[in-house]
Length: 305
Image 1 (cartoon, rainbow, N blue to C red):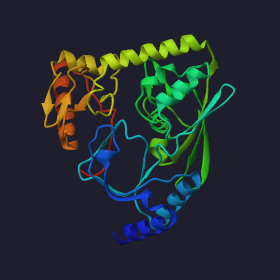
Image 2: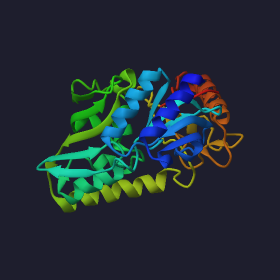
Image 3: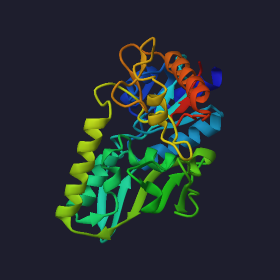
Image 4: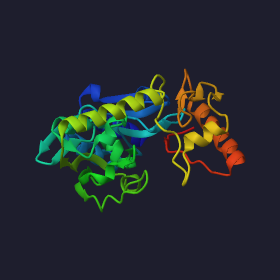
């Protein structure tokens, strides 16, 4: 605790007062609206500040967690120990250079997709409905409607655990299904460079509008969630299996299998992380008993339960 307090004191010396929050409820910073307090929630405004934060945290050997938009994330009820570094709306610049788009990690995927569409660049239509930031999308190799972010990534810049700026090509990022190297190396993603193709603007925007409409009509956007709860099992669709098992509407505390789309666990009011964990376990057990198929969570779980 002494190291943590010393680390926080040092961070307060280099960052504005409103950029260092103590015992900050993580329910404010996740799309699930669930999660206990973070010991210290830090929001750098520049790359230089972010690098300085990483170096200070390393100096004091305090646990460090990176956070983007807080989608696809379940924070446990006792919260997160150590320092949370959040690069969100303060890092959201999007620029174009020919067929390349550069987006800072905090830029929302919907905004990056629409920016590409307005620039008549195709290849990112699939991502218009992904609720997270582009940094989170890279971290998870997010995908939707038969597209994955790995298909358009040219280069990723990040800060490593030593506080150095590092760069990754598409191949070096080691993308696979819902995975990237950033889940293994604790680097802080800063900016993503995407390589797209010239296309017909009307066709691009029409496809985005269609996918947006499909998402809005089929997904339970009226309730907080972390997005799709389970990974797609080989040869099946998780939502279909859950629906066929008769689990739509199954509720534990404030957590519920969506009545609209069985692939989503939603927070219908006051859900705890334990509610969600218990509901996930119940769904896994019943689906396996009924179909012999194991479901695995797609949602990342962090913190102390």
